[in-house]
Length: 181
Image (cartoon, rainbow, N blue to C red):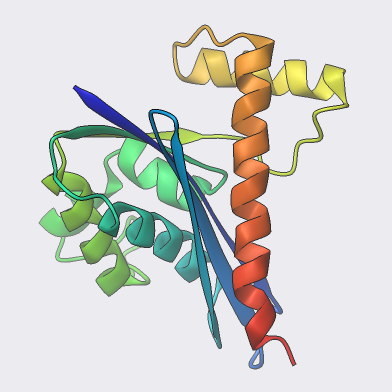
């Protein structure tokens, strides 16, 4: 099966304030090819940018017969799919566990539709803003990643994931730049 790996991130300056700006970025890898995308918006939130990064990355994939791995530092996005929140949201008329309407419903519906259109999509939570030169910290997060995902990544492979996640973060900041005053 053809495999695509996506690293996505969202960022927001002034999150929750009236005048804020946000950006999103994603890195798509297929075999030896790599594509980088980014964008931004004003009057947004970090969660909207996190969702947008995943949506825009998935929209770029032509054909649906792929196994897609998505790496994100957003628990908001990853946990929805790992824990199946969206199944409960649909069943409960888009009401969350706090008995409140699900925020960003239209974005969630778009992302869920895209995810369900592929042969396979697996989400992985990766620690954001890790510094590769801090070996002890990286090893701690590698152990956690391997435990959480029943994986056996090497330190070298994990450092590559960190680098690509950092690139997605940089792209999110690039996407935000045109909207900053």
